[in-house]
Length: 73
Image 1 (cartoon, rainbow, N blue to C red):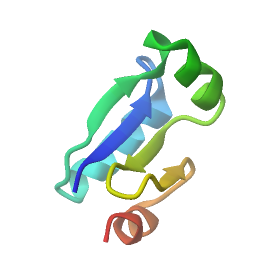
Image 2 (tube, helix red, strand yellow; image 1 turned 60 degrees about the vertical axis):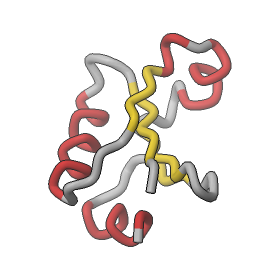
Image 3 (tube, one colour; image 1 turned 180 degrees about the vertical axis):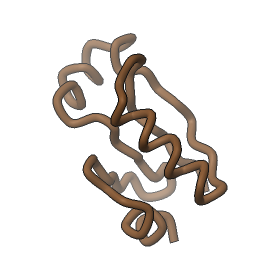
Image 4 (spheres, helix red, strand yellow; image 1 turned 90 degrees about the vertical axis):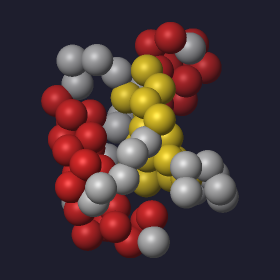
């Protein structure tokens, strides 16, 4: 399954989300929202957000490893 992580640099919450993904052994495509005005407007106040490419569902911060595991299952 393809996952997308919407984030930005120097975001400690985004780093925590990346660490949770790594703990689960899954990779996500990282998209920096600063590079796209529409993404910045949509996610600017709620990153990090993980999105499933297969069905478009999203989980936004705060999430923990259990909720992330359930989200990608």
